[in-house]
Image (tube, rainbow, N blue to C red):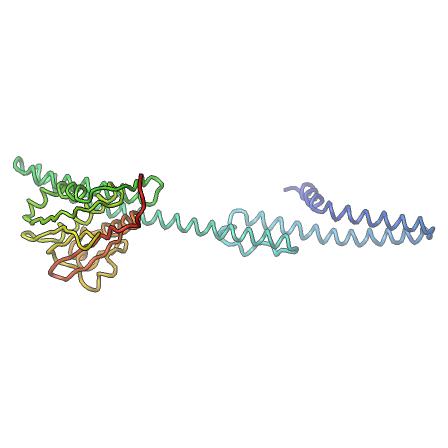
Length: 332
């Protein structure tokens, strides 16, 4: 900003003070006239006021210019270091200073949150890309092996579809496009739909399935509940060896249990199995584990208002319990 423009801006900011000073001078001259005082004294007073006003104006203008240059210099880096803001001289300036610092703090928090979300997405996509390479490579080998491998190829294709579904649901969880629709649905129908999806994998791995009908009608979102069951059933199949058994049954009034006879979870890993990216002892054995599956299960269960707990005995199996209880109210 040019000096003339700067002086005009300073003068505009001091309009009220200038008007007040001029009013006081005029009142003083008026009093001198009314009391018929010597004009020499009036002129002396006027000159004295003019000198004092000039000195104060110079100090004020210098401070105004310094503050302007400081703010102009800070324009690009104010979010980096707000500590160089000019010291407030009045209560109103102190209020503005506090407001600016509050806004800077909130912008920093939002930026940190956005950076964290971006880092999480980048890390997840990196893991996902490596994860999805495995079934794609397996399908390539099966195609080279010739006919007779249809079932295995269908299973690998199903895994690809599952991984794609996982990444889509991961994105939807933190967006406004979650499309949540709570209504009463038959739990057994959702379970059968999930079991049918993995039927060929049960046959290929020679794992026995025991499903005891629950007879429950639950208040939930059928699509998200199916996704939750798919993830839990997929996890059970992943860590249950050939010849094992997976059971689905009702426990108590409103709890669905998914139990397997797999390798189980180490006691020290149990408190952290729902943490994002945590793979634990089993994950270290399975190099393709990402630690995202159970994290997604916990997030979906929280979204639906269902309780999710895990108990396990290492080397004997794991039991996942989904608490489906809800307050009683009518759903239209």
